[in-house]
Amino acid sequence: MTQAVWIIDDDKAIRWVLEKALTRAGIAHRSFERADDALSALPSGTPRAIVSDIRMPGIDGLKFLAAVKADYPSLPVIIMTAHADLDSAVASFQGGAFEYLPKPFDIDTAVQLIERALAENGGADEAGDSAEALPALLGQAPAMQDVFRAIGRLSQSSVTVLITGESGTGKERVAEALHRHSARAAKPFIALNTAAIPKDLLESELFGHEKGAFTGALATRRGRFEEAEGGTLFLDEIGDMPTELQTRLLRVLSDGQFYRVGGHTPIKANVRVIAATHQHLEERVKQGLFREDLYHRLNVIRLRLPPLRERREDVPLLARHFLAKSAAHLGVEPKRLTEAAMARLTGYAFPGNVRELENLCQWLTVMAPGQSVEEGDLPPEVREAAGETSAIGPAGDWVAGLSAEVARRLAAGEIGLIDELTRRFETTCIRAGLAHTGGRKVEAAHVLGWGRNTLTRKIQELGLEEHDDMH
Image 1 (cartoon, rainbow, N blue to C red):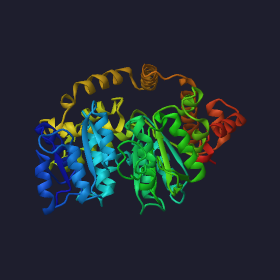
Image 2: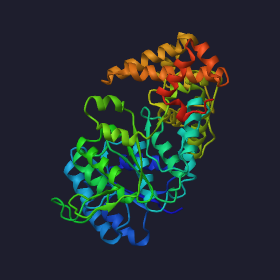
Image 3: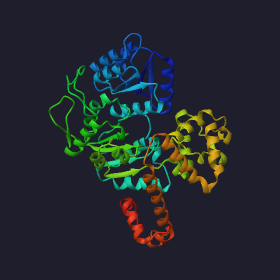
């Protein structure tokens, strides 16, 4: 097995955490305590990506980056830096870093970033089928089947797509699937979380910059639009994009070309844009925080990913998948959930959605004492929360869930909830009514308590004709 990723950090704990995470992800790696040692080892075997700290004894991360880029310009280097080191982060980008990883970092985010760096440089080493990394695309719930159908219908199109859904529902995985099943599949898929990049770096990150465009811009740098040429650019958390960059993005979508920062020559952009957000963009438009014209440009086709609590029937399927995946990465037998433990898990609301379920399954694989996972083996917060939910009884579950959802959104500072929640309620009722009557609208209107004209108008207002097979 070749050493796909090198880790360089004088902190043993950081090395250990990254080593364990990469092992679980099936990515080969090698660690160094000093950048000097890594430089000495480069001639005898080049990795596909490097993750390096910025402050170390001997050669620091920036000098190491410069040395690597001089001899291996296409080798992606991820620089780890403390939040206080914003100047260092800027210097990292200007020096050609692939990305910077602020400490303390979320380990899942770190692994995803490393996987993207590997893909940029020829693919993850022996990391298995990419379908393995698409757990959000497992599901038998009607809402997920709607998503699957939409991906199929969009497979021959390069139309712009807006994906909405809470954090952890798998928006990037759906974007990857849209790319993989499109005519652009052989070209790059480039993902950028616009909320994770400091505002003063985001413009250069998107559009690149020319040499000398600003102090410290020692070389021309390609942006994500150029990296995605011919392929797909996924812009996550688009609702957090600064207003001035919204204007530049709108211009690219309208004109099909852009300028690097400090550049005067237009560059053609043959890129499909897929955007995603967990925010209510219509409300942000009303508040003047998001351009209405950009919203309409992005909202050509809209896919809503349901939170896991709206697709509880998928929890057993996903749990078995994640337990098997975790066991394979650790080289052990998969754990099995008893009926009682599975019922308790299914009753849990999963505020972190599919990502939280995956993390929980990894925890159970390591921490549960036996092969059979009992109720008592689940984390206390899951046992207690699920117990409270199940005590409400089936008839009250949706009311309790709605109450919890409203409380969560209000606590997050959201406003204008009624319109969106009403749309979701009416959409659910209409789909259930039509399913109950085999698609016969007159009967569906009757059982729902509406007239046929009201049902027809609601279907049009909610855009259900465009996305559902209704007769």
